[in-house]
Image (cartoon, rainbow, N blue to C red):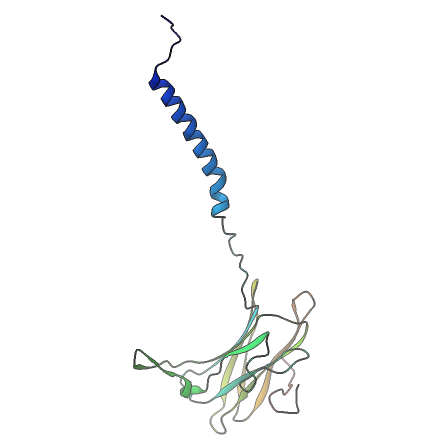
Length: 198
């Protein structure tokens, strides 16, 4: 009798073991390609910069946000979209705080305007607030400018506006590398009224 003779069970176990090893090898090399690990904190947002303006949520007054990018038209409620920048929300005070969902009227007290940019041409940007209402008390108006790719809060500031007044929050320059430089909150550059800007 041959002492080296193996049974059919042993051969079957060997084949199953080899198949298991092949499966584990293929799975181990293929899974990372099917579901790559997300790099923490890395996103490619479609919006590169946001300019947000807020004022007293209980105010019924209309304050308008205006931005003049370099060498192009200004962005505001009369010119909401210039291709690479757009006024996403035109808040008119209480008039824009009521909406209808499922035939039910709801009111949200929030005074907020935002302009977003999907491209940032190099040059000077001017950010203004304009008190559109013709009468009322002076209002404190806040601005926040945020870069989104990568995330960085560029500027926060406050100005006080009186009825019909336009005032500059800040001017800044986007350099050729996309960096914000030369921030200046000591200027007053009217951009809302025709004939005072592009």
